[in-house]
Length: 370
Image (cartoon, rainbow, N blue to C red; front, side, top):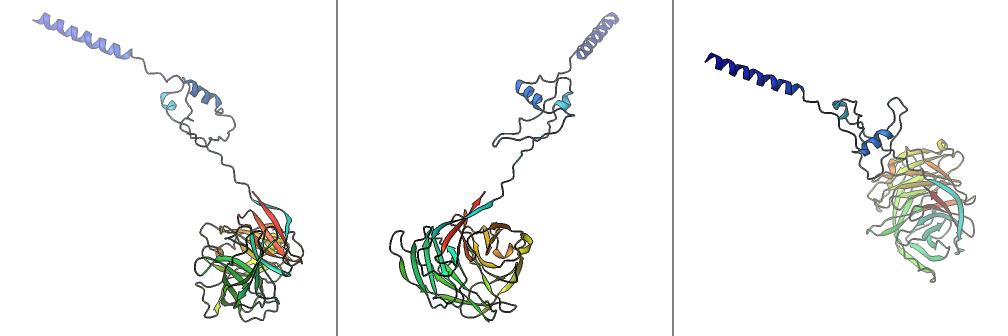
């Protein structure tokens, strides 16, 4: 019995010893051999002590494969730790600028003698509205981009004391309307000035005889400044919200910005609110004055013109026109004669279209280059 127990004990010991020996002979797993793709990535990566470089990822490409794989000598822990993903390099968009001004059409209507404003039609692309300065009839003129007369319309229930500005904006019934700024006051003696709103007339078709007639009845909105009479030639109307600003002519190189209270009320005179002062000297326009203003059809750009320059501001999506004046504007040179007065954006915002008080009047284009 004792011999048998000894034999069993010896066998158990041998079994345990064999298991232990077998365990110690199991080889630790090796790091996986890099694939061909991995070797290519490793070869392309910069050396640890070399200069760092920026990495671009093609649009639509996944960056999950751009992981450095350690060589065989590295520990398994190090091999399993991915390197930071490469940084995509996105170039900044080029800044838009304006090229040289070119004359592209002569207005055929010789009754347009003192063109003082300009507005691009939203309903009829290629048609521009303009008007004569003080001392003339209360009439708006339509001309196309070839200078052909497309219509002459007398504004009902309106007077031309000193018409200086015109914009296209939303009408009372939701349609398109012309806003005429009777806001000139060279002697600063007018107790109140007026903005007229009339439904946009329908011009004649291209090649047809010029349309002549009268507009619908004008709404007259009487406004005052909070700090006494001012001379002004700039009117801004937001094409979607109907927000209205008046931009004045102050001393050389300066202008004031005033907001008209909404909703518009033609039953009483309302007082405007001063919202900003523009110092054009900050961008080098020192000895000039504001002669017109405009908003692009998409409400993303605002331009203020002087006799020789245009100052352009960006309007953020959904932003108010009254909120943009702390920007430093871009400046474009305008070369449309010594009496350049009117300005508007082309319907696609690809150019500034301008007009002056020369006779015959001419249309000029300063193209936007992006």
